[in-house]
Image (cartoon, rainbow, N blue to C red; front, side, top):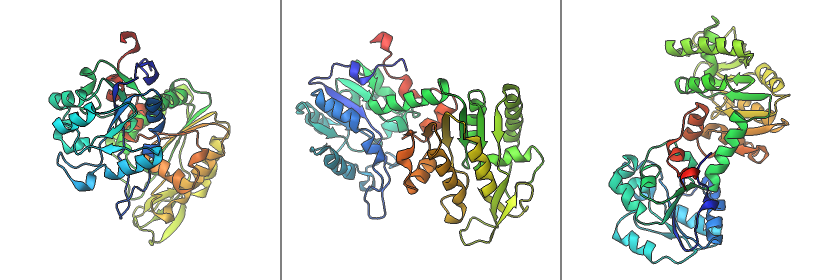
Length: 398
């Protein structure tokens, strides 16, 4: 990554705008249920404290539609940050305006100010130049640490960069990019990619890119159905997009040319409907009933996939093996979690559903790296450039 890094900035006494991603989940009582994204930014914040900077944190939360909504206030985040840092974090009532500027101008070194939800203003998502200028007027330099939002061309992600003298990557963003580089662009081989989930149209582009970079691809979840269908096998009630089927044929041909092995499920747990109480049965991949759904991979598939990973030096996983949010269809995904954490390999997991499986099993600490970015991670896998990274100051220009 040929972009400016936080440790290359002069930070002492400077007002530093840090774009973070505190779009965290809440439980029914309105309490933060998972603060992993907040904790992931602590190295950057602590570094800025050590450097004597004045820290201005900014984030979005949810989709308030450009309107102020107490439901999407960052107040709980400010409380959690105060506890994690053992230091007072002041929450501004807005993210722009004269009152916010007064707060910013009155800051002393090592003060921390958290701006209120950026998406309370339509200008954030619309990348409005005037909104970006107002945000930029609060600071001397900018640090990008919101990897989970780096695929968005929003004002605080892209527009602001034009209005500040320098913008640099924080520790979280650099770590995300470094691990991705290790896994995809400069990996230890053999490289095994595991792709699952239900967003077939989107993820077929990922497989198309990965087949050029990895040694083996394991495909589960709904992603497996078009690969089975082009070989003439029934896939139950699943529907296959014709454009996806054409892509699959191209991928199969490219894999053959490059010597990349594609592994598909050999058995499924099938049910009449998406319901944990529905009747289920274990069937081979040739025997999925036309009026049933294949909702999880079976034990023979998990054994096959586990054996395919035994010699891996790098494993990259995005997407569950079935409808694992329903207990009856979770065993395949959880068996794969066990296989990944026991592999002697660099293991990188990306995507909200996938990392949730590791957290539920209490195995997340055994993974080399879990990405904080769902959409951003997917776009990297597709081979796309992330706008929030591209907008940072180039090292050669600094």
